[in-house]
Image (cartoon, rainbow, N blue to C red; front, side):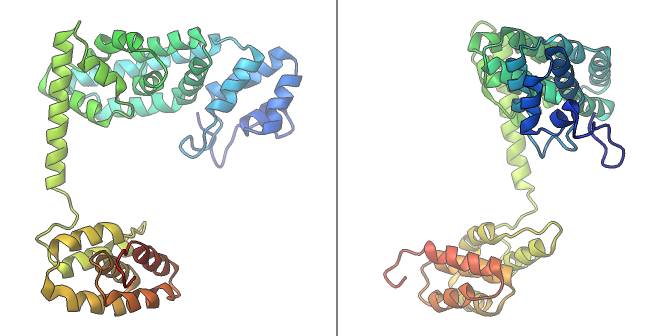
Length: 342
């Protein structure tokens, strides 16, 4: 669906299709001035064959949705695209894998979901904006796709911020039917509830007095998700209070040396607040004066938050350091100080 960086199907920039594929502002003006059938055809081609190299780096759905409104374009092409047999095959693959493993995120199902997301994401986002403009057909398509389509999570997120409570409640049975009543299915449901980008539908389904069995199942999934999050926090690879000051400072340096680089000044200061004792003050002062920029920044922030009187000249020196990250960090640490000396 996406344009290859080497072999691209993007039309020349002088054509109406090429302008719309590039998301140009004058492309919208040309579309409004062009014969309507030609403009609608070019617009539909863009929505059904996402021209963006990476949809995560550029939003284009509102641009196309406004053109749908201005051109009074019908949604038959989007409807045919969403409910194409290809999407049904993806959904069937996910269902087959659920039957084998009880986990809709496993194996072939996960790959099928990724394909469906790439193939239908832009069309679903356009429908979401059209729902905001009061398009009832777009709303019906999103509801139908959330119930039956492979990329149902995306459709549900669009509905979560636009549909009314009654419409969302009616989707509950169809969504929960995607998760078999098995231990793996319940675990997958707990992950879906925990990782939902928009929690509103799940909250409505958990509070639906007309469907007590459904409500009880979602409440259990919520509890399982909270328990799983607690267990992951216990297994966190980050520093823990029992580490000690040298280990925390070493962890800061490891983050700075990693790829991509991680500046751990703030979390390290919180860890130091839990681990540093009075006898660690000389080490922290020495680190704040002579350490590498990342560990120096962490030590300075910790000392500044403790209102240590010896930190002021160290902050001044760090603010004048040629390392821009260290200088900015020192200025920020000083700004947090509230004592009379500061």
